Amino acid sequence: MWLSVREIHAVTELIASIAGPYLFVTGLGFFISSNFYQRMIAAQSDADPILLNLSGAVHFVVGMVVLANHFKVSSMAGALVTLVGAAAVLKGASLIVIPDYMTKSQQMGKRGVLATGIAFIAVGTYLSYVGYF
Image 1 (cartoon, helix red, strand yellow):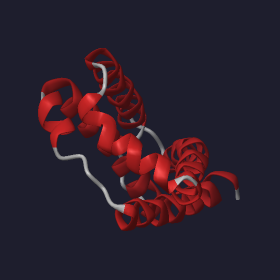
Image 2 (cartoon, one colour):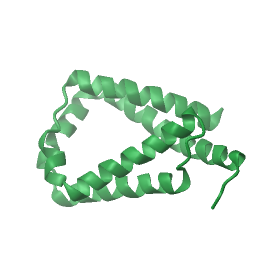
Image 3 (spheres, one colour):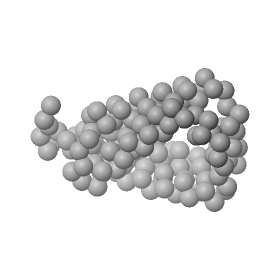
């Protein structure tokens, strides 16, 4: 299916309007509840295997939905939307195929959590702007 440039931009805006607020809110969570996120990341090695597999499935499916509808890099926003989809697919596939490896070294200090929060807020703000304004 070939989309026009206008249709591609519409898909970019739609996905940005969903992914942007999610990333922004998650980034805020990393700042406001950084201790919780450090504990959550550290506890992945003790997580229930079924929950890890389900998390992988959700990441994979959400990422594939994004990539199936948006695999065009026609702008900075388009590139970010495609990267968000690809990152979700990679994380999901990794949690399904190599779960032991994915849960072994998942340690992140406070600085890492805050740096991730900054990145999520920045990308989330930009994508929200693209999606809503």
